[in-house]
Image (cartoon, rainbow, N blue to C red; front, side, top):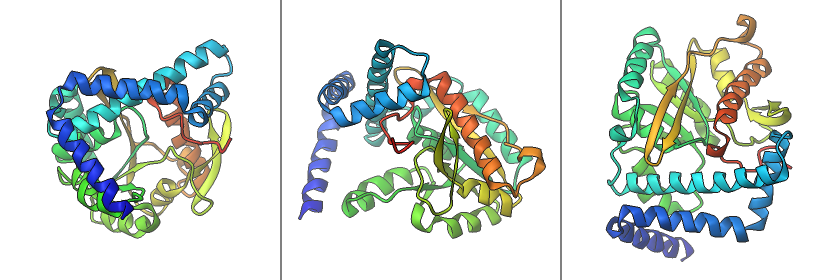
Length: 290
């Protein structure tokens, strides 16, 4: 019964969202973010603790201001994902460096036809990134967590993520699916910035403190002749993004069997991007199990 109630409520909200002016949707989620920041004490304090740990040079007032920006940036991401879902957001128009990004994609496909692991994070607008890549021929098997509501997952979330040709697999049974795709010269996309369970994970530094990090990407790199490439959708204004596509990440000292060293390098690259735009990362997640 709970599943049907939640599904019906979400369907009703999505219908209303199609009718609401875009400016009103931005205002609604902005107000919701401010409300949760003020009254959602547990997540607010976790966000502030994470930021204080990552940026010890910042004062308490600076941490508080940055934490508020994190909430407000996330409200924009949620708004724009909703607009994408309802067909009211032009993804190509939103990407300010579209021509450059497409040239970069073409270069990757030509130079590395054997399959690419696209590494990213809950940063900027990760759903827009996946959609943009698929729209332009860089389709992936995207790995994610299965939602708690089966109806929402099957009838709303999955169709949205597969809209432009991406496919999906859940974390629990993703390894074999990724191996098969990459062996066929296809692409895989993973978000590796959240805490991982003890299975297939290693502890490596992230913002100077050890964090349990999935070793899945490093294991794939060790077993297969594939390239791992960092991708990020960086917000540069309301409804505007710059797609950043890095170079293939080499194995440290050309030793692809050193899973811990490779994973450490992946975290270093993610940290560099997050440091440049800290307000755009998902700091309310208990990444370090504080």
